[in-house]
Length: 368
Image (cartoon, rainbow, N blue to C red; front, side, top):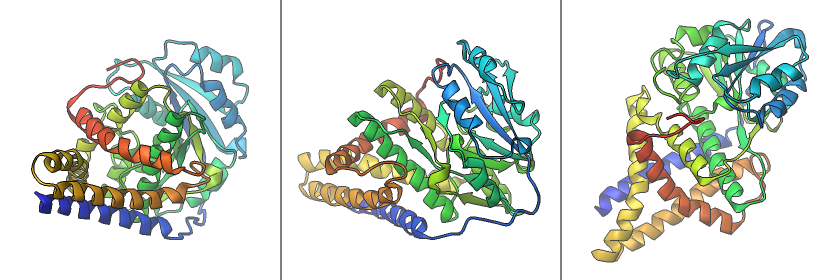
């Protein structure tokens, strides 16, 4: 058993080292624009009354020629006054609302697909209605596209909060963002976030868009990126730039956090790359080994407690090294106490979210 746990740990640590090396690479992401692009920013929303005007204000502040982009807010069955607030506050001719009524099959993906089918842009940018974008978001991201580039994953952060709960979420989310970026840099595109994405509309249709995963509520970001990586020879880029960060709020309650992470975890077994699925299983077993090492160490052999301590310390050191890449951009300085709490909670959270994402149910925007 110790040998099996050691193999799992070795694979996970190699994975973290690859991410660290990839994040260290100083790549020049900019390309020469071969032609002028018209951009469509697509923002799906469902019951975002509390956030949507802040999002609209940040969109209106974009430093970009308004004749070169449009903004489409697509309503996904909202039951609050989100639409009314938008209608009362939209004054720009390049911003409009699309109404999409559906039977809750596909949800957000069907809404996004409807907007893509009805937009004018050859480049699609996506964000969420509870997000704030920076004014240089378009200006700095568009030049990354060339004839070979099809997809760009940007960075998303949780807004700064005063509570320890908010800080822990910010640390955990920053880790996900950085790991996703490191994997893209290493040529293993697997993790991204729809709150800050850009892709070519032609390539979206070329790979079939969401057609083969419309039944999965989540995955309008990662599943699309992975399809492009698997089915085409186009380049996928990760863009880490402080002036293009998209900011969103952390979850107010543990219940919200739980359902969000379970929803994200539910995508895993729907990945098309079998090697990626195998790797996710190995990572899950690595995390699952910690409670087993504790149990075996107490009941059978103290060596399990030594292995648990050693592997946990190595895990902390490597994951902290990854987090340092996001300091001052994705979060402020991490205290030792915050890091230790986050690392301890990381293990049961991965175990529970992974299991429930595969076998359980979750709620999103009031629906199961």
